[in-house]
Length: 150
Image (cartoon, rainbow, N blue to C red):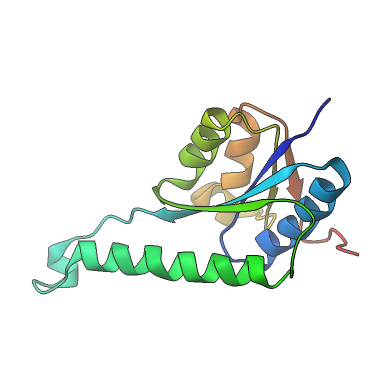
């Protein structure tokens, strides 16, 4: 198996930071390139709830701009990595767009974090990681909350 490209879905949680640490170490070992992907979810807005003066486009643009700044901070925090690290911010539905980007970019491996929700919260909220594992066009490594980073 030849791993040349690794996708790391990144939601700014401690779990995605842990996955990034794993992905960076693996990319350096294999000489692979990394792509950090943040999907800004497209929320459903109601003018009845949010009021007349609410501008959806402004909020979405601000979310995108904030995500771009935050993801650059994450990349900068590791200094000068030994492998290329690309970033991508898109608006959409996380599970669907993670799988779409992996397929379009011919990604060899997805490494992502997971909180490991159980019980009712898992049933109600689902798990992006679980759906990616089921439908991704490539292998997926899920880094759980108890995984060591050193």
